[in-house]
Amino acid sequence: MKLENIRPVISESLLAIAPEANLQTLSPDANLREELDLDSMDFLNFLTALHTKLHVEIPESDYKLLATMRGIESYLVQKVTS
Amino acid sequence: MPSLGADMQAGTLVVWRKQPGDQVGRGEIVAEVETDKGIIEVESFIAGTLEAQLVEPGTRVPVGTKLAIIGEMGNAPHTQREQAAAAPAGAGSTPLPMPTSTPVPLQDSAVHATPSARRVLRERGLAADGVHGTGLHGVITRADAVQARGGESPYQVPAPPAPQAGATSIQPPRVRVSPRARRRARELGLSLSGIVGSGQDGAVVGSDVERAAREQPRAISSTSSRMRSAIAQAMTRSKREIPHYYLTHTVDLEPALAWLGEQNERRALPDRLLLGILFVRAVALAVRQVPELNAHYTEDTLHAFPYVHVGVAVSLRGGGLIAPAVLNAHEGSLDELARAFKDLVNRARSGRVTSSEMGSATITITSLGERGVESVFPVIVPPQVAMVGFGAVVQKPMVVGEAVLPRPTVTISLAGDHRVSDGHRGGLFLSAIAALLAEPARL
Image 1 (cartoon, each protein chain N blue to C red):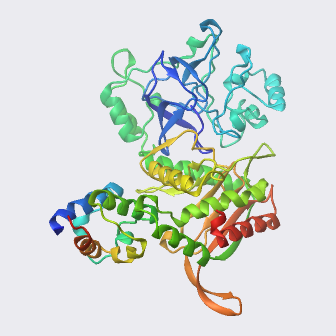
Image 2 (tube, rainbow over the protein chains, first blue to last red; image 1 turned 180 degrees about the vertical axis):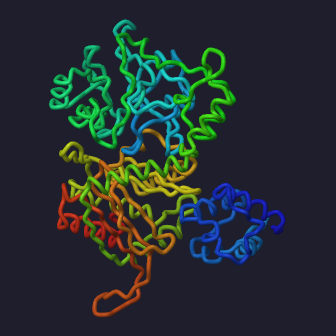
């Protein structure tokens, strides 16, 4: 799937959890959980939202690829086929 | 107005979910109440018909104030007993306290006091129904009875307005308030009841609220600072009254993490387990071996519970925390617990917990490992007598057999109330948690 289609889904899912976050100023290589103060429950909720909206399977062993915004975007571009 | 935690003194009725004439089932949501901890859904502890709403939406009333009258099922209208549509203060040893099914004379309605409290009240010539009970199920304790005549306790809760004879005459005085004034008061965190109105017939108008805000510069101005002061009050009380002792126990988490990884590899995202769920279950099962830690301590008496409602300290975005309980965390499957836990944390963060989840915890957990804290020294939430802390998962050298190996570890801590337990028993509790985490399939 194209990045421009994925980005709004990522933003929407993150803002549902951290409504105060300013995603425009977020560095693409910053650790997302630290920057947005997401705990393990928030992070699981975020991934569950991506799973539901994009029909993507994300095994736990891939979590380490999803630490930054850049990582999440490139992971989803590869994994989401439709 | 139920007490939804030891630190709660008053709440604002936000909206009625049941109207006069509606049937109300036991456990059904009757109203929403705003407290320092967000919006709480108030459940009825009896089944019947909502006869009357006694509090207007937008009104802040002290804990113990009657909110509504529910006529019990099967009773003819003229014999209806009045019941506050809320769990009594300090909701205690049943998840949804139920009044007895035996008919009770009207003068005894929903007001219970310990024998020594009754004696004190009789001596002072006071009626029990004007006194706020802080004991289990809202029972009036001796201390409540003493305080009711102007005792010296700093935790005194303003007594609800003394009910007069007849069920319909206990409606609080109605303050006329303009919509704009109501909105501004809510924004400023001001109670309308203290504001003198300058409008027609003494109605409170917008300028009255603005003036009150200027004249009370120290007035609490937002929900989060109200929450801060509620936490301050409960924690000050805890440190003043409870002689805490502290223990820590560092546990090899390799077996638990390996089991969790194996489980989650097979599970779709929505069904995945979090390490925190294993912690909740391990505490709930282990504390049954040391029942004096799964208890409330009120009026020099320890009340142990046959079930475990695990309070979970949930930090909120924007500051503050609340600790609603996962009810009956000792029973059911781990998947059921996982669903209940996730649902509870998410609702706590969006400000939607129910009255039976607040104030009912029998023991509480705090987990501060997310940002690297290694061990926590918790402050017990009164009237509970123990609190368990979990630190971060840290790689440490552990002796495994004859070898020293790097292992993921967690430091579990216990704050215990020395009035009711000793370090030896606390140590047994922590080692029981450790043993369960070493064999996660038992969870």
